[in-house]
Amino acid sequence: MTKPKVLIIDDDESLRLSLNRALDRQGFEARSVMGCAEAIAVASHFNPDLALIDLRLNDGSGIDLISKLKIKNPSIQCIILTGFGSIEDAVLATQKGAFHFITKPFNLKEVVGLAHKAISHLNLINENHTLKSALNTKYHFDKIIGNSDKIQDVLNLVEKVADTDTTILVTGESGTGKELIAKALHYNSSRANKPFVPINCGAIPSELLESELFGHIKGAFTGAINNRMGRFEMADEGSLFLDEIGDMSAHLQVKLLRVLQERKFEPIGSTKTVESNVRIIAATNINIEKAIQEGRFREDLYYRLNVIPITIPPLRDRKSDIPILLDHFMDKFNTLRNRKVEGISSNALDLLFHYSWPGNIRELENLVERLVILKGQGCIDVDDLPDKYRSRSIKDANPDQLEIPETGMDFNSAIDTYENALILKALEKTGWNRNQAAILLKLNRTTLVEKIKKKGLTPPPQMTV
Image (cartoon, rainbow, N blue to C red; front, side, top):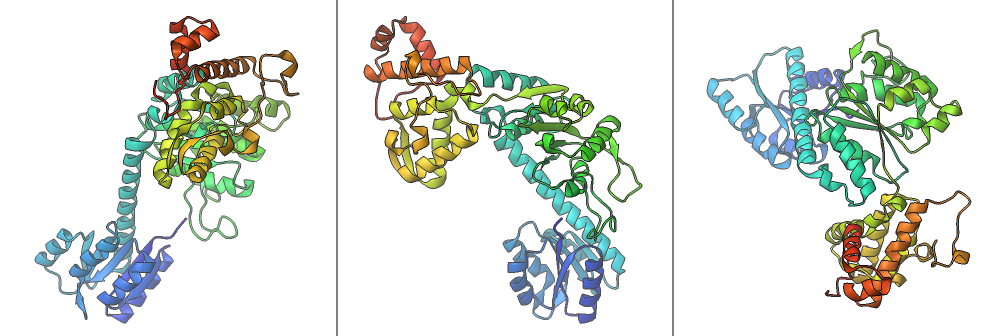
């Protein structure tokens, strides 16, 4: 955990040294200077969270220094130290944004206590800012893109269970958007104004993961030089997202099961029990039931986690969402990369419909970013696609040309993909004349229009229909 940074500004060298030592012993990273000019210079690269400022300095006023420091860092907390205190000075310091005003002589423990309170106040400000940003911009349901029946079924389930404390297990292949679903669950619940704390159980070695989850006390093991708060405690009254839960070691599975059952835990090295008021949202991309059969995952933990399962479909099973996702990502990267790509041709889109998308939405997003950057402007065509996206898994309706992989294929997805390709071919052949396309496909015009609407198919931007 990053140490809070404190800048001490006082022309009394012995006081600076005493404060520096006291703060260092209490887990702060302290620096000290003797005047305003030096304080501004050091603050520009040290970026302090808190400043302890003498009211009267050799080269200026401590109260004026508050304003100058806040120009560089508006959230910096400031405590004024003075041996010449008055009510007027205290009021003025508060008006300038000081967190507190303390008169000399003072007890070092008192100053250290105020420093802790100031950092806690800063953390609360930052947390509230983060929460407001998340609530206002990031995780509403309209940020999960797709009109297909399968993704709408997922969103309907999320909406039903979001405002509960029920444990959720989100399953799906890598790149399908499991964390986005977890955040939608949290930020649409009664815990939305409390922390959402994620941790990837597969990215942290087992010997470190226990400390990350439950915390430790100073001296619990070699290298534990300070107390450390774990993710369970950080997420108090909020939600803890355990990503890739299937990779958790057997030892930690036992300890997690106990926390889920008893709603309490002990940090490593501590005998003190900590109550846990946390909603658990877990996620995995592995087949948990198979892992249970192989002895890699506890069956009792699985049932504790799998109270309400949410399975996110892979992109190959919701290919009707591809045009909508393409438009969304093109708009995003046109803005971010200052490009003017206008869309994608029917032939290129047809190839993307036939691709299997092993990397799911994450792969599609990465592809669109690459295409937008390299194309720069105009319409993306077949020649702009990387080689692997140009081959088809379904060439046409001739059974001799169909290829079924050894692992099998999703029949409904294959039929849906081929239907999309047929409709796009007919529309392209007729210049997106829906009447003529319906005649070619021997469909009722209204049936074709409904299919086009449901699948989100759109003409190239240069074509008016």
